[in-house]
Image (cartoon, each protein chain N blue to C red):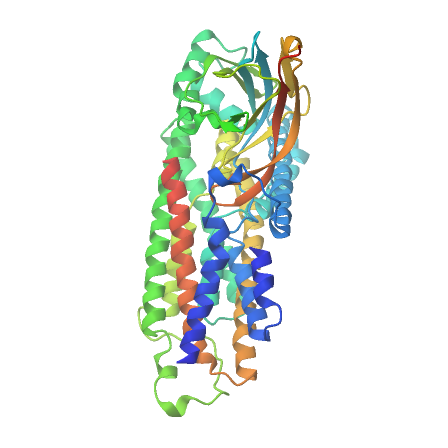
Length: 213
Length: 312
């Protein structure tokens, strides 16, 4: 946007320059130079491998303290202490399930093709040190398993940027049973589009794996 | 005619400027072509602001616990300072009445102090809306916390709809040239040294009447962050401290929104002044500005309405 404005202004008379300034001021409100998260989540990614390819991805979301407090207040029955099975059920039914509308905020590609997440399994939650953590598994249907080299990219991302997902500082990326396929996963920066604020750089977890022989 | 043409050009340029924000296509994002220099800066800013807000959010929560567990007065002061900073940064994001303020002052002639007054009033009323909402629904009626937050989205939606309506009124006036009819009247009026006095009221549909309606409509939008802070305070039996924190948050937001207001007043003045100096009939061009400003109000509030609708 700003490069467009610059292009128009160059070589023009002063009114155009002034116009550009006014535009910049008014567009600040709707352009990409906007940060507006209300919920902050640290996430981790555990990539699960089978004999021939990826079988699933186990994700955890750890909420900021304020949002954690809201979840705890509304969906648990005990004022303190660990979550009971009923609390976890209540969180899953009352809160977590609704994120299905957003495909659980999972952005995933397998060999460059987007994989739409329709369902997840093995949901659990725990509340520790004032923070709520969800954990759940995204099954990955790996239709063409273990070619010579495959890439899986996965990230938690809210394209409306109402939620700011960030890879956790510690132990953000792990791999299960990856030896057989020489799997390696690491964060990398990728451009993501947000629905109203334009593109932004975000970390995604990129895995590379394949037949070793 | 050429001035009308210029006005039209200005409008087109404005819409072009908005295009990147509108043309966010999830299917093209994946290709990740070489980024434009402009977007890299914006993207970096987005992430830095988000990270700063993440830390502030954490620190405010920790300070609330400190107050609850140890009754620390120092922690109250810390909450206020952090909430103020949080407000300044948070209001850089979309919403919070900035589009309304900016477009109003691009479309209408005003003193720069009006930019501060309008920006501050919107932010403070927004804080008050959040306090009323949480006080009534959560503290008195004992609603669940998420019910309160979701109801806020409905209020937000109504607020954007009102703003869009007022934007249409602005647009209608811009097109029909109602705002300062006497300037466009007689041919003898066309001297370039005409007085740039502050706007004066003609009738009930006056500029200042529209302005206060816009302030109220934009002020109705409760900020989700203010509500979350209040709900957190309530859960920690510290609603009063939460209310003071939201006052500090609103003051912080007032600064950001006022800066936008003043910049828009001065931006408009620079445009009109320059046109005058180079001998163009500025008052003709002003109609273009009025239409452009009104269009931005309608488009921006429409976008925010859609966003609120998606969250309803």
